[in-house]
Length: 204
Length: 204
Image (cartoon, rainbow over all chains, first blue to last red):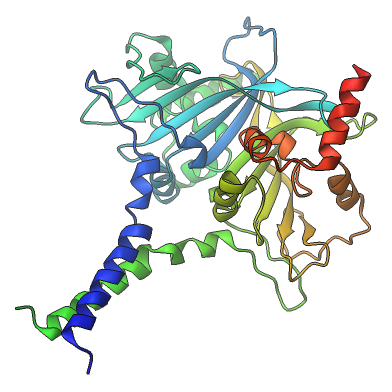
């Protein structure tokens, strides 16, 4: 017969195991935090989240010309990714991170095209928090100092552009190649995006 | 006093919890599998692994000209990523995945530059398995059918090029912007890569 002491030790060991490897590991790298001034703290671990896409020299304005090439990488917290795969849209507490990164050309054995350099060029964060933000979503911008950031005012262009053109729930899922087919299949594409698509086809 | 029956029930509940949320979740998405002909099965879950970098129209040959633009995205299994962050090099069982993806230009509200399309253009896998491969590492290529793939013969150029030019343990860490500074700090850069760097500087 197993003694009560041994059983208690076993419970303690299994609880320790569960504490070390259970779901409690995830939130530290997935959730965002705010300071006492309601500023968002820099999401330090976003590079370990789920990758969505990369743009190269993308611009929403035809007049925009940069003096250099750059990449934009997009990441999302793993819980939100899993929910999107199941439902075709974002749950509350979704955090999307857009990382700007300098592009290198010739270097090492690369002869043409571009690869990503070690220099980051700002990080933008798009957070869904229905209780915290009246419009459900908010934008925050970080420079390379990574200091806590104030919410970007809702009068900024980014809010209206995302509402008017984004494919799913004010996010640019049309540029996230593995998620766009899921949104199509689940029927979660926005009316605004579908209107843009129809107008684009008329112009052809 | 807690009864032995209650304690046993508690043990069972905690074990179930640990089984559901413990590390056993991870291997299914992180490890690769081989069929009975030693062919590698397509790593279905690589998009949920850790992202390393993206290239745009990269080429190691100056003469190479493609008729279209494309992106290359690189992912690694999470356990190997964690080990690299700690040690500056790759552990046994590391799996790197290179995903080719078609580039789109104008589309939706994008006016210039390129974004990633839903079409993949082949996947290459680089696996470290010291017991399985005499040279420790092996390459495998998948087309969009994703059928199990035979190991690429070690006479192929990819092996010699990776040995002669890769920054860490025959992998192109010089193109992985968050890992290159770690390798520098840990002193794990290869002699071959450092020789390339010196020759590059002489030519300037």
